[in-house]
Length: 301
Image (cartoon, rainbow, N blue to C red; front, side):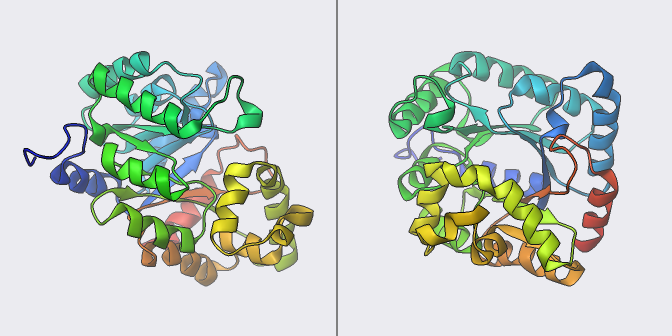
């Protein structure tokens, strides 16, 4: 590291190693974070299967922590397991750093702490999110968690710049290839850029878009997402009735195998290092869609 470089900046060689570990594709899933004792064996088997299928990272959806990652790390050999995301308002930074350090001891280099600021309407005591995130990163620094072992779900330019300066990169949720291109320009070449992308294995436009709107509608009441869409060319009209076709088609990959691969590739071509793929089907969100994951893996070889 250059002597003039801030000590909380991730070293370029560490960032390159992280990109190599996670590879180009990962799986984003709420089901993998399950804490139900009766599902533990199925979750562990699913994680091991995803590793065998070649996915480089497992992104544990919703508000997750090192405790959710620990069983999956024990059930697998080399795949990266990451939170996507841990809400900074609901998890103490010092305790999070300590939990991360414990996983680093038992599974070196395999746990990644993904952080997010959440949404004002969903979090009690919400205040200026940027300042709160800076304070949280300061606390992680003080507790000894290296920058290369943490990432942030950043959307806006200011937060993207912060992630480039103080973390290993960003894991933006509900974004478009255009956002990815803009994020890469802000981040520079070195930090990890790993957007989440929702995938529907259905080639029927009406059915696919209906399911997409069902899942998209709740997010359209959250300004963090709608403001980001407005920054990238969408209008208020795109947020009505569960989302316009234009918006749905931008943030979901749906269709036959050729179309799906093209939509995934669009994020890589826009500058993503890695795409975190979330399978969407009519089942409950915590379902483990193992046959669909297997099919998806065949598109990525």
